[in-house]
Amino acid sequence: MPHARYPACRLPPLGRSLLFALLLQPIAYAEPLADTTPVAAEVLTIRQSQHTDWFEMEARIEPVDQGSVAAQTAGRVSQITVDVNDVVPAGQLLIEITNTSQSAGLDQAKAALQAAESQQRDAERQLARMSALVAKGTISRREYDSAKTQSDAAISAVDQAKAALVQAKENLGYTRILAPYAGVVSGRHVALGETVSPGQLLLTGYAFEKMRLVAELPARFVNQLQPQTQLRATLPDGQSLLLSQHQLFQFSDPNSHTFTLRALLPPQDKPLWHAGGWAKLALPLPPRPMIQIPETALLRQSELSAVYLKQGEGYVLRQVRLGRHLDGQVEVLAGLQDGEKIATDAYRILNQQGGHYAP
Image (cartoon, rainbow, N blue to C red; front, side):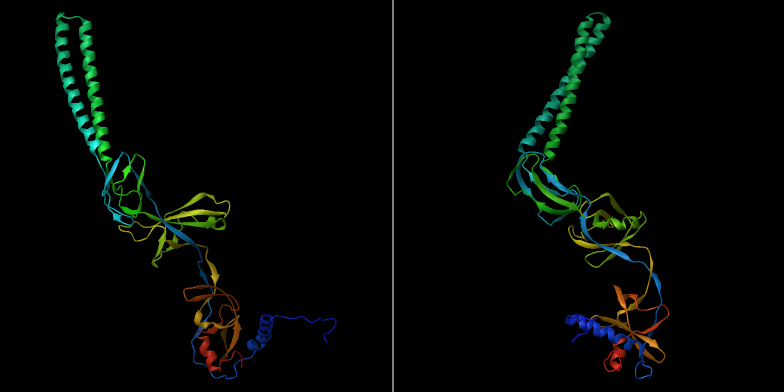
């Protein structure tokens, strides 16, 4: 029957196992190994050192230059030379539209220019004759002014015809859609033989030469980012780069309280990183003191993490509290001090003791 001052409490099985492990810890820490013969194992001296931590973010790969190509004239699609996912150089023909009316317009503009230039030459000759006659007093000044007006009108007509010719050439050029830059075709919106009108969407694509990473930086890390800060990028192929060109938006998302961060990737002459993919972008944080040990020095059993601490000719078990795993090393938050020595192969020590934590 439980004591009245200390009522009975029922613990779940997990709680009973944790309580049992805690009760055994003082015995494991205080008692040396039964066999005091030195165990042949490497020993690591704990040294606290300054380490730079990184805040890692998910980043989206996107092109700097991307856009759509639309029809600027009416006609029927007579040729399509590319499809989705094609890589095209700058200036390559993408789509061709029938140019019957545009060619006719160009010929008409050329003929109109020739007629205007002929009229201009005739008006200039007439003005020259009138100039000589008005000087001799043969004709009135009014007749000369009329000839001068006709000459000026002929010059204006030539300028207008030249402008119409330029526009006709431009309209004819609209029938051949060329790639504005080297890039990748990401969408095709017309089919062969389809009739298009000005403003209708034809193709979409992006330039692969300039790519960037876009991530969301929490507000608490904004002050850590400086103009000279180098960000670490880990790309999908495992390649790691340091990026020095980055841009932080001046406003935050009101829901997530994060700032958009853009980091420019090095220029590429072929598509190495695909738009829409995901990468890692890491921000360096101020250095802080840290104790790191190799993962092989850890002994794990259920919820217990411990190391074998060197004491005299033997070892004792020491429980530790762990932090992050970094490149085969484990951060120790509590349980070890600078200058202490531990075994680098904990399971080797355990096996030599018959597979038990404590003697």
